[in-house]
Length: 522
Image (tube, rainbow, N blue to C red):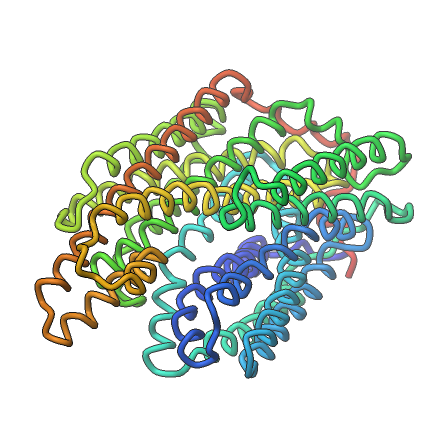
C-alpha cells in the first residue's frame, strides 16, 4: 500500500515554488538601475526586461494549466521550475539588453508552467474546506512576503555583487525546490485521457497575450490611440472566438460555463481588483521610498515589511474567517480596507509624513489585501472540478496578472499625466529646456538633476527643482491613490452584491471510495 504524503512537507515544497515565482518580479525591479549603468539599457529596454516576462507568463498561463490537467501537474511544475531556473541563470551571463530580454521571456514560460500547478497540487492534497482554506491562505501569503523580501534580498546582493547575482541565485534555488517537489509532492492519477484542446490553447494564448501587450503599451501610445483600440478590438474578437470554440468542443480546456457560477466569476473579479490596487501600491510606494525619501533598495524593502507581514497575516486569517463568517463578508471587508488606505494616503501624502503613520497605513492596506485575495482564491478553487483544478488555478493566476498589469498601466498613466502637468508650471524658468524635458521623464530624473545642480554650486536652483518635483509627485500620487480607492470601492460593492456568502462543502466521498493517498502514483 502506498503511504500517504506528509502534508507539512508537501505544503513547504509548494509554497517555496510559489514564493520563487512571486519573488522574481520584485527582485528584478531592484536590478533595473544597475542594468542601465552596466548594460547600457535604455528606458524602453528596461521596460521590456520586466514586460517580456509578464507577456509570456500571461499568454501561456491558461494553456499550461490545461496541459497540466491532462499530462500531470507534478511533472509540469518540475519542468517549469527547471526552465525558469536555467533561463534565469543563463540570463546572468547576458552581455546586452537583448540577451537579457530573451532570457526573461523564457523565464516567463517557466513561470507559466510552474505557478498554476502549485495551487492545483495544493488543493489535491488538502481536500477538506478547512484544510484547504489554511493551505490557500499560506499560499496567498507568499505574495505578500515577496513584496518586501525581494527588495531586501536584491538590495543585499547588489551591495555585495553585481546585477548578475540576482539572476544567478534563482537557478540554484529552483533546483532545490525541484528536489523538494520530487521527494515530497505526490503525483495523482490524471482522469483526463482526451487529446489537448489545441484550438483553445492557441486562442487563449492569443487573447491573453494581445490583451496584456495592449495594456502594457497603452500608456505610451495613448489609451484611445488607433493602436490601442485595435489591440482591444482584436482581444475581444479572439475572446469571443475562444468562448465559441470552448462551447462547441467535447473536451474544452476551460468550461466557460464556470463563469455563470458567482463563486468563480465574482471571486475572480475581486482578485483582479485586489491586484490592481497591489501593483498600484508597489508602483507608487517604491518611488516614494527610493526617490522622495532617498532610501536604498535594501532600506526600501525593510520599510515595506509592515505591508508584507500584514498581507501574510490577512491571507492566513482571512481564509479561516471566510469558512466561519462567509466569503462575502471577508472579501468586502478586505476591499473596504484597501479603499480606506488609498483615500487616507491621498489626503495626507507628504515627504515629511512620519514613518509611524506610513507603517499604520501599510498595515491597513496589507490586511485588506490579504483578506481579499486569499479568500477569493479559495472561492475560485472551490468552484472548479478536481479534473480542471490546473486550468482553474490558471484563471486565478491570470486575474492576478491582468489586475497587476492594469494597476501599473492605469495608475501609472494617471500619475505620469498629472506629474508632468504640475511640473509644467512648477519648474523654475531658469532651468534649461533640455533639463526640463529630462525632469518630466520621472521624479527620479528630476531629483538627479537637482543633485547635479547642487554639486555645481547652484543650490537655490537645485532646491527649486527638488521642491517642484516633490510637489508634482505628491499631486500625481494623490490622484492615483483616489483612482485606486474608487476601484476598491467598486470591487467591494460588486462583491457585496454578487459574491456568495458560503460556497457549499465538497460532497463527501461514497463509502469505499479510495482516498487521495490511495490514488497516488508511486
